[in-house]
Image (cartoon, rainbow, N blue to C red; front, side):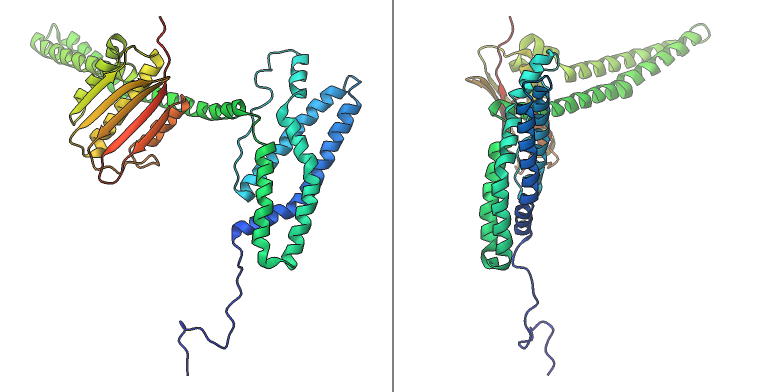
Length: 391
């Protein structure tokens, strides 16, 4: 009798396969690599401490110790990368030691290097890793041959301790260090946004007002040539040029409004947001409950945030009505835009530009919160830091 290919043959064993997933094998590889890397780190730590402290009574001792701490930072960076790739744990990079000390004297830089907490904790990490590396290497190697049924649990327990060591000893020194690392990341977003805005302004000027003004100059030149020979044609060309001037002026006004609207400077958020709402394709109710105006920069960011959110309402929501609410809560400026559209908006690149808006707000210590279930309604809440307006 011939058996169907879909029915297993009871006389054969099933094909061999691994019962351990790829993450477990990564953890095992990490534990086995602990010993050789721990030996390197321990030898380096002992060498730095011995040479640096031993020669501290001489001129070169302390600079050598500072150089050793900088090298420990590099070892710490390699360990963070190894933990990120093999254990899936992400630890922020500490800020560079030279930040804030470049313009100071030699002894100030030397003292800053000697009291570098990141370098000292990296040396401590290298020192305590040797006994831990011996233990994890031995336990993992034995478990591969003897305790393999429970090897995944053993590997997970040992690598959990590894993750804790990396987070505890190789992370930024404190909340200030973490904040500096976050701001360094946000600075790139601000620079990219400013460059994109400059390119947009240049493109609008080149393709809009500049091209129209060039055509206007050519038309006026032709009208000047025809002024004596054909006054009627020259008059028609001057009349056309007059119309072109009006259009060019309107384009320049729109461009200036996109950079910073005059109504915002003169009358504040209430009037400026009402002007945006009047241009929206759906009816928008604007409520601004501010007793005083925030700083110019915060006010401008709030204006353009609401402007972009209302553009999304016009283009993507399918809503029949929307509302804008602005108020102050303690030291935060709160913005909320709500519409009764179909919902389903996302901040993960769904085409509405909300992801870029969230990045720009984060770069100025702001927050964007989206609540948009399928079927609606959609509520977008933005927080900005409040700063008082300068007198």
